[in-house]
Length: 278
DNA sequence: CGCATTTCCTGGAGGC
DNA sequence: TGCCTCCAGGAAATGC
Image (cartoon, rainbow, N blue to C red; front, top):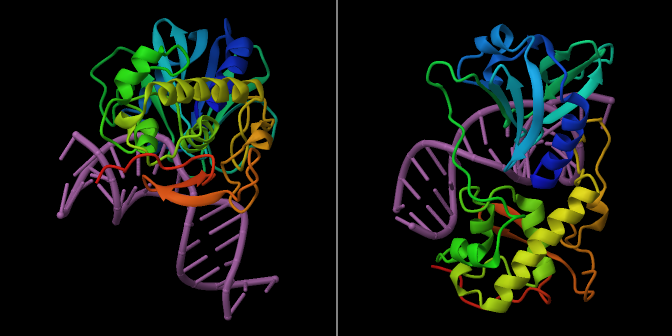
């Protein structure tokens, strides 16, 4: 489940490897992973130069010249890897884009197909599912901005997961940050006091930065762009640790359900301080 | 407005 | 071993 740190890891590798290179042949074996018209993909992309690869929210954005953008969302099980041309092609590889003069290609694989690709060429109005608006990036967020964004009568975790509110957090890093901040996920977001808000924002940033340094968390599908696994799962303190002792206080980590998601908490470190919204 | 539920999809886990 | 059911979850849609 690639979230901000996983996508950031992929993007840094792709940017380092691909900037300045030109795209070659495009092979799309599953048209329905493309939102909008899939034809421009193979028609308009070859020969464009890669200006750079960056991230916005959980999206990988490849900037091209002449001006175009290739946007990937990895959903649950999406992988974006740079492979040797002759490497065996894994099942569910939906898109392959050769890199000129490199003996390598970019492959997009996504068994569950919750992910997708957008090809933005600035041409006719984009049809199909649009890229939704997303909220501010968490890493540059100031405490003032964070408090403003969080000042709503909603379950805290549901709010943090909402990409329109803050961009990039998913189930793993929400649980890790809430645990690190010692805040219960069902806390009413607008009831956080100054100290809690500060702790939570710091925990979010610290967790994301550490995860980026570890190349993200690999549970099942996620891989870095070079195919290797991330290692931050070894440092998780809450996520997927139900039944195991809290690394802070030894209390057994519990699994509950919040916002329709499995949620892992330490019932001692994360006390429910205020009534959740109706 | 918020929130629970459903939908999409596949592979892996667990039951028998 | 093999079949079956259940379940994970990002994001959007639906119903209350």
